[in-house]
Image (cartoon, rainbow, N blue to C red; front, side):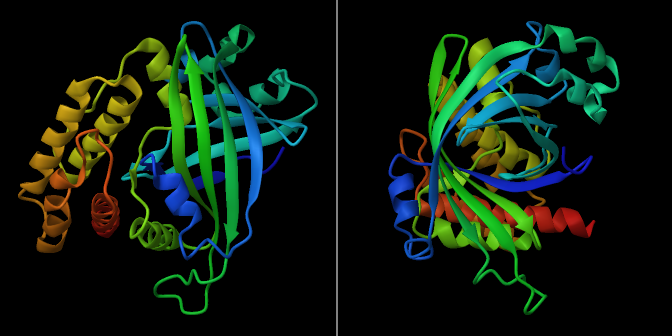
Length: 304
């Protein structure tokens, strides 16, 4: 097993139907080498959903003949950016390593009593194309310091509780360097790729799909309204319930008029309500404005 409490820092982006092709043909990526793999993933929980309630995801992933066991805690952040604890190690076959699992911090408390009840609950099968990006990503304010980002494009589906929903997303994971490099790369891609921030992990999407329940959080601050709009869009595309698209548009309208926005943030926010088509898919203008706004709100939060 690797370091006791490694942190995963990533930016998740949902893509419009034409997004994958646009991403692969983006001038920044078209000449860079990539690798493609087929990933088969099984997520485990108790029948009562104890891990989901604790916002913990546990999966076995089969890739290139290996099986990896992964534990992830709830992500902290918004606007597509999340930071969370992650443990991952190889196991000999497609069965949970309960001994090693019991040693991890999330399973030291109440969850220690549910290990025996863990069973497969949902699966995500997809093709992953990945790029390792180190050149041309210079951290702002640190001339000469470079960052390493893994960019992945996932296409497939989530299968949970007899329901299915497509996977069509990109993830930018910071392997080394400053998180500012994630924002810089995402903004560059959004100029030509129809995309938007996503705040829903594959596991949380699968759990909501199985339960047919997509709760939306209360919102007060601009960051909370952007988060609510993002979750509502995630819910709309997985549920196909029109009410969630209305919730997203209402949240975006409220955000655009929020008194706490500064002038620059307001310009970005006011571009959002008209940036979605009738099917809730983003234009490049929407994605660029949403990322710029999320970045600005995250920066303002850090200054407080």
